Image (cartoon, rainbow, N blue to C red):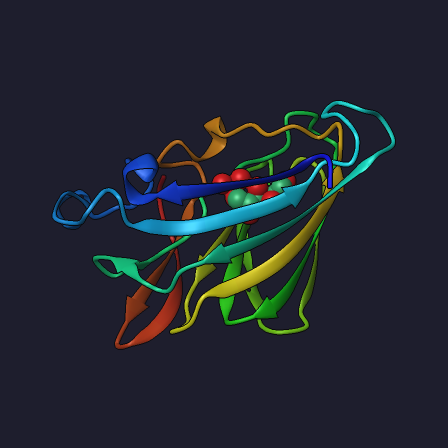
Length: 170
Ligand code: F6R
Ligand code: ZN
């Protein structure tokens, strides 16, 4: 099908995202953290079109911090997005322009509406690959600066064997 794409994100491409730099340095940079398959039925930037994607995040952690996506907000700021979880357990971490951070629990069947202007990142807190589908406007674009290692004001860490959403000063 024309416009079908895929990409994989390895640990080495996520440098500066995880808080435990020492644990990060001890890990294989070629380890795949997540893969994305998506369909662009119209060219990127087309007004009025939609893109559809599937993301699969592996289970794992860097130190006590679970594997997660890089995270971004949309380059055209007011463009919203839907996420829908199909397999696994996780947390959708969100941050609005005022700096308020919060999360939504992800589990099979959970649907998430991400308003425009809100940065979004997904964390796999389970023992199996976390899969979710996404639908976003074809002219949204991506701005990855928001999460350049910092920027979400929150981290999901394993504490006493359980995921804990922790607000940070970042
Ligand atoms: C599209 C979207 C998802 C992510 C994917 C990977 O707007 O939010 O398809 O692109 O989950 O995450 P990032 O892009 O943060 O590496
Ligand atoms: Zn997005």
